[in-house]
Length: 325
Image 1 (tube, helix red, strand yellow):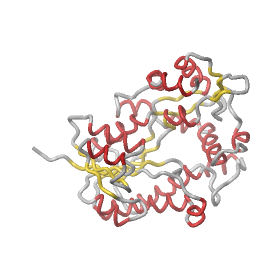
Image 2: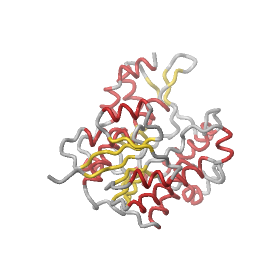
Image 3: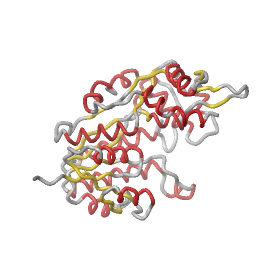
């Protein structure tokens, strides 16, 4: 019997990478086994993964040599970088997160090339700057001239994979269900009412569950070279803020009202990276063509188990009620 091929997963203990690990482990017909990359193989998350039969190896996106060693013998690699990972002010002063993420993506691309990897799936996003230049909207720029650096830097790194001729699928993601649930979920106002304030105006937001990202990436790898050189933009739902509020209301058993911040209001909030986040949301809201490019039908064809947001929220109703008690 032909032995299974190795998929090396960068960020295997995170949401995206963890979803791919789960997808491979729960598919008895998967042609793959997982090699989980972590900076610390002694961490609790790494030990739990090893206990599930996963090969765990130490590697660091800041070390190209460690990545070459970790990718050796792998058929495929899933590359995820984390723009938002915690940095001290001193660390960011020495090496801004924009530079760090670009260098990490470059290290991964070079390592995949050096290791002779047959297929890379690179988790990326669009460059938001051309949109704002076309519209003439002088949104504030941050971190050295970026409008939404967590988008823009990944888009800049796309060229590295292409120039090195790494066999790559460029995976563009929407917001995670988990992010909207935990990071941008409803809060109580001074009258005790639950208010959802995501700044997307009356436009649609594109969302998907983290587990479904993993299942979809698994199917992309299973399709051999079909998606190499392609940009695959995935989605489970396109929903308005009002629709999100209605689903949350049903799950919680209490009315949630949608009252969005304007983009300038959100940029003025005293929260980390408010300008970058607001600019990114404005970019997605103002480009309905990008909402439609994130293709629900294609995603469902790749991942027939695709879960709707209504079903996901329903499964997490108790947690939602506890969070908003």
